[in-house]
Image (cartoon, rainbow, N blue to C red):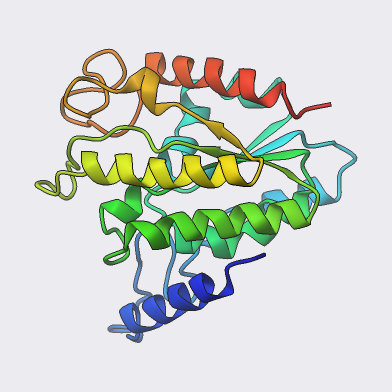
Length: 243
């Protein structure tokens, strides 16, 4: 059952957070590349989505996420092109924004599967404070909407993070663990594939391994080696659902 209460909470939070108007005649931009008139940045992929819907191409997988997903294509574009995978990541986005995007950017494309990797920007507070439980519920709602529409769902663990360069001092590692615990439990209870990137990429302090998988001045986004690890893990998981 779709978590409507969670969706309502997200709408209320964003309504309160962005109850401002145009300033000096200029559009106000928000995290995730959106504006007050398009805070989920639906326009980013609208043209590409229309082309895909009007083509005869069959989409195997849509990857829904934030900058970690969006940047994957920059490091390994062939991974997506050669496998009929579609990247729908948007840098900076949080789960409430993705929940609004799930229909146009995933459901309407009618893929066989969706890979959801989300939550780290919520922990960072990119669009305001979020309880870990509510982050998990937003991801669960995306999964439930996808399942109702006949799409196989894979929910990914949030990657380890010891700090946020754009918002230092938040000590996110324990929150990442808690979110992953909730996501793994939900997947187990609902027969959904849980994709565990975390265990293969975490260091002894709970962060993303430096320099193996990220740089010391980033700490959040994978490098080429990091994406190679993720590719190996996700391909193994996708074999379970792709025809």
